[in-house]
Length: 73
Image (cartoon, rainbow, N blue to C red; front, side):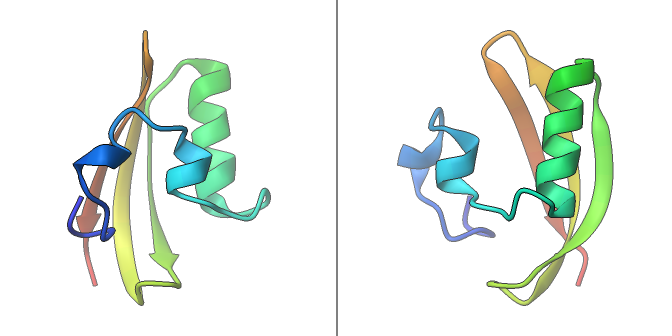
């Protein structure tokens, strides 16, 4: 959560409100694919507002999606 400058109140919130992204961004495409296909996805992408590269893993769950981020800058 600190990596993205979010506090514990972000847990359980709508992904797009916490992590806004252009609908055509790699983030949006990969997250939508994970939910539609109900499969895990992993990718690397630059997070412009923070100036960092992230390794990202997303896994659909019964309650939504579990996300793991790691700074690989």
